[in-house]
Structure formats: structure tokens, C-alpha cells
Length: 166
Length: 281
Image 1 (cartoon, rainbow over the protein chains, first blue to last red):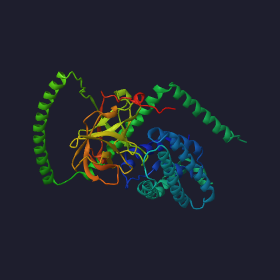
Image 2 (cartoon, each protein chain N blue to C red; image 1 turned 120 degrees about the vertical axis):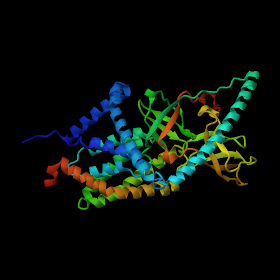
Image 3 (cartoon, rainbow over the protein chains, first blue to last red; image 1 turned 90 degrees about the horizontal axis):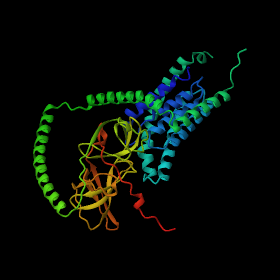
Image 4 (tube, one colour; image 1 turned 30 degrees about the horizontal axis):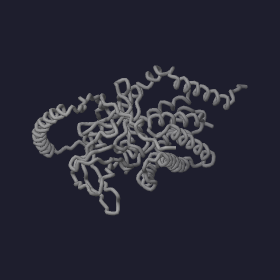
């Protein structure tokens, strides 16, 4: 049951992304709180089925966005994989891991999107995309990474109190 | 000793269940349940969007009463002059109707039917310019229907579900619209961009265009109705070494404050792909 509670939280985060964070651009970049929440939740002890979460959230966001659903499924699953990998190697400095994953996740998601748009012959410049979208989005994501991580820590401790005492 | 189900089996079971649900959904057996389950989420999304709008209005609403009164007076004067212009145009339209009837030339003048919808969100991808509106196929919306406001063209419906729809804005990088420059009486192509700026291209070098010229939809290609205001030219790029000249356009619609739109319900885009010639093998 504890592994099902994050589902409505993720859905609410998607709604906040659509209604609020999508309307707060810096140049053309926006924060991706769904990706940040996915990273933060994956890094918590006791969280199971992280890949299923990545697949489900990627499907949900992909169905809403004009970007094809497989792009979001692939990038969010890749982000979960990196989160699991780094969690095991930088477990003593979780905030640092969170920031590193934020940078990596932002670059991965945006690079895949840019490549897809280029292949689809949509005229966007790689340089403009990086300068006007990716870098501002990265700044937003780094600012929000720590608060979201701390929220995920509290949520994980509430849902899995036994893991805190181990 | 408590034995637990091995994790790979649990994961495989969950994946099989998800796959089964996906197959049922794709087969259409879960349509009713999907619609019923999505509706609360849509209502919550609308609530969140409206709360954000209220906070935004509270922060940005201007406090200077004197400036508002002055602006109100200016707008009332503009309305009066536009009403006079409307009367003149209606008279000319009546004359044109007579001429068209004499020539036995059937021209469609659709009496547009509008459906008002609220914008409840934006596309999660920062590379695209799409918005989500709170009306869908249950309200009569269909793919390709044009979307406007009282100021001008917004875009067209890209995807539809039962109670929501996704609208591609004219500022989207993949958006291409056939346009008509009213002053120069020439057709051009309007394109969006990553930054949200729109520009018209493919204008012949010997055509004289000026800043302030109005850009309207031409109706060519059947994607949009004719004579919908898109914007006006703000800068021109004309180089002798180029084959065509281009110009930047200031859109008539403020896409940064787009909260309500009108969908033209009785306009169906034409599919001209059967008419397009295919290269010989």
C-alpha cells in the first residue's frame, strides 16, 4: 500500500507542471518538477518498483505532451536507471547525487527531445535550444532539486518508517 | 520464517497486468472507465489553473486608476471608429454579394459557430508551444478545428480526448500557416519558432511590404478559415542576395496571457493530400 501512495502525488505534480510551472518560463526554459520528483523518489531507501514508476509517469506525461510518448518513457526510465546507479555509489552524499542527477536528467531529456525534433524536420537550432531552453531549465531544476528531495525524504520516512531505523 | 514472493515474479506479474490493461484500453473496452477516471483529474487541473490565475491577476493587476480611465477613454474612441468602419464594410459586402450572384460564383461565407474553452495547462515540453483546453470530443471538438480569440488566430486542435483537447499554437516551431498580406495583396507563409516568434516568409523580392501591414489567414490549403487576423508586420528582412524576403510578425493574440479561447466548431479542415501530385517512380 505504501508503494501506491506516491501515485496520486505524481499525478498532482503533473498538474502543477501543466498549470503553473509551464507558465513560468525563464527565456524559453521551464522546470520539470515531475522528473525531479521521480529522481528524488527513486533515491529513497525502501522505494520499490522505481522502473515501473518511471514507465507509468513517462506514459502519463507523454500522452499529454505533443512529444511522442516513447520519448518520455525512454528518458524517464533512463533517469531512474541513473538514479539507482548513482544512489549506490554516492550514497553518503545524497544531495550531491540529487544535483548530479538533476543535471544529467535535464541534459538527457532535452537532448533526446531535440534529436527527435531534428529528425522530425522541425526547424529548431541546436545552439538556440541549448542556450534558450536547456540552460534556463537546468537553472530552474537545480533550484528546485533540493526542496523536492527533502520533500521526498519526509514522504519516504513517513511511508517506510522501518527503513529509517535500519 | 516468513517467505516472500521473489521480486522478479512480482515485477513480471505487475508488467503482465499493465500489459493486459493496455491491450483492453487499446481495444476500447475500458473507454467508459477511462473517461470516468480522467474526469476528476481534469476537474482538479482546472481548479489548480484557476487558483494560479487568481494569484497571477492579484499580483499583476494595475493599481493606477487614472491610467485605467485614460485607457478606457482611448478604447471607447477606438470602438466608435471601428463601428463606423464596420458599417462601411458591410455596405461593400452587400455590393460584393450582388456581383458574386450575377457571376454565378458560389462563395462560402460560413456563419461561424464558436465553443468557448478555458486554457488549463501548457505542454510539459519547453520546446513546443501547445496548450490544453478543457473541452473535447464530448463538446463537439474535432482534430484540426481552428482556435481563435476575439483578437485573432490562436492555432488549431492537434489532439482530442473526451473532455480535453490539445491546441497547437501558431507560435509552435512546426506550425505553418498560409497567410495573406492585406496591404500588399500577396500570399506568404507564416512559421513559428522555438522562441515563440512568428515570421512570414516566401515573399517575392519585388513586393513592397511595410511595417504595420496586417497579416491574415488566406484559407489556402484548407487548414484555416479565410481572413482571420494573425498579426502585423514589425520588421522586414530584405537582402538582395536572398531569393525571398521575410518579415517578423507581432501576433494579435497575447500568448503569454492566454486563458480563454474560442474553437470554430463548424469549420472542418480539408485534406488535400489526394490532390497532391506524387513523383513518378
